[in-house]
Length: 318
Image (tube, rainbow, N blue to C red; front, side, top):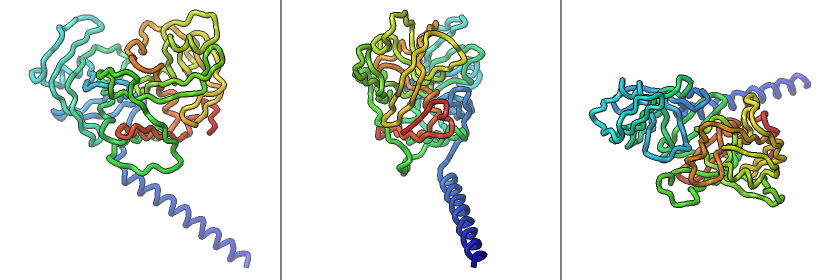
C-alpha cells in the first residue's frame, strides 16, 4: 500500500512538472522576445530604413520624434542627401548637428517613423550607435525581462494578478515638446516639517546612474539638513561611487510596493540630467526598475511591476 501511495505522489509530481514546463514553453513561444544588452542601457538591434543594422539604446525619458546617432555610424550608413541639416557642423569634441527628414526604425518587428536625427560625437565610454526615445513604446505593450535580458513588443497581453498595476501620468504642464513623457507617483517622502510629500518621477529607462534622481529644488524641501546640495540627489545611487552626502529614507512607495531603508545621496556633476526636465520632481531610473519584471502599457497609461531576483539590494516588502 505504501509503495502505491509513493508511486501516485511521484506520478503527480511528474505531471505537474511537465505541465509547468510546457506552459512556460508555450508562453515563451507565443511572445516574440528579442535579446538585449544592458551596458548599462537597454541596447537592442534596430534596422534603419535602408536595411542597415545598428545597436540603439532605449530611452523612455526622451519624448520626441527624434533619434540620436553616433556621428561615425550616421555618416557611414545613412544617405545624408535625403535629410536637411538644420545646424552648421561644429568640429569640436562635442560635435552636434540636427537633420530633419523621415527615417523608419524597426526594433523586433515594431516599426515607427522618426522625423529628426540628432548627430553627436560621443565619448568612447558612451552608448553604441545611438538611442531612440519613447516613440518605440507608444503603439505597443512592451515586456522587459531584466533577468534573462529579453524584451518584446506586443499588441495585446493578458497581465496576471502577480503584477502590480501602477498608473502613469502625463506631464503636469501642457508642454507639447514633452507630451509623451510618463510620470509615476512615489510616496513615503516627507518634507522638512514631517508632512507627507507626494512626488511624480519620470519613467526613465535612460536614467542609468541612479534609482531615483531628484531635482535640487525638490530635495531642499524634503531634506532637513543645513548643507549645500548641488545639481541633483539620487535615491538608490550606486554606493561604489562614494560621492556626496548620504541620508536614509525609512520607506519609499511605488504604488503599494514598499522599499525599505533606501539610501539618498546628494552629489555634484558637471552635467545635470534634470535640467531639461520641465515637469515632475525627478527621474525613476534603472537602478530600481531593473529589479522588476516590467510591462509598459503607454496606450492605457499603466506600468506593471513584479519583483524579480534582482531586487534584494533593497529590503522589499509588499
